[in-house]
Length: 207
Image (cartoon, rainbow, N blue to C red; front, side, top):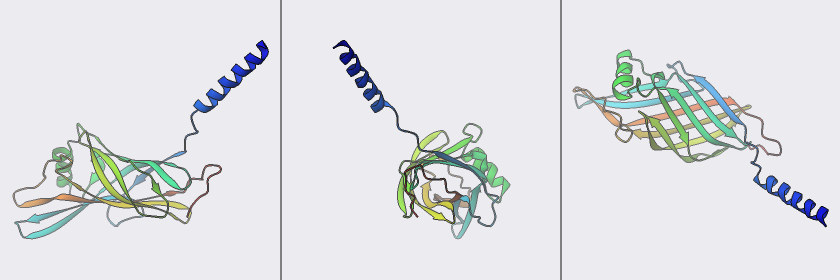
């Protein structure tokens, strides 16, 4: 009887431990990416702002992020918990004086040296989805909505998408000067190419 009770207790403990054991984590991929600016390349993280000079002349300024990291978990069909991070001073345009004002006046790079973006929903392969996310800039998190699509192309994964944000909603000081008024809305566009990770055992890949 004592032996039977001991065996039963041991089986119960084993079952409890088996239930409590955490599931194996999905593999996480981290990609370091570089964009030298100029002609758009396969991988980029770009922003566009518009301004009006003297109340009449419309102009467009395109900038880019020189170096950034992309990280996500991959289950063979979906990118989960994707994040993007870069140094504030990695944001560039074609004008050094404009960059200095952007880093120092608008983004306060000395006190807030990093910008982080995280997606709060999964991005499946093969269809465009609306993804809620968050951006940390100037030391505070703000909501952002992105349109994203993940595709397989010749053994690679391509994550591309667009978003629009407002300077006022991100609490970024207005960079306008007396002769040129900068629009509040900034357009974002991204495209990241990386080698497709192997699907975890037992997971079917989608194309």
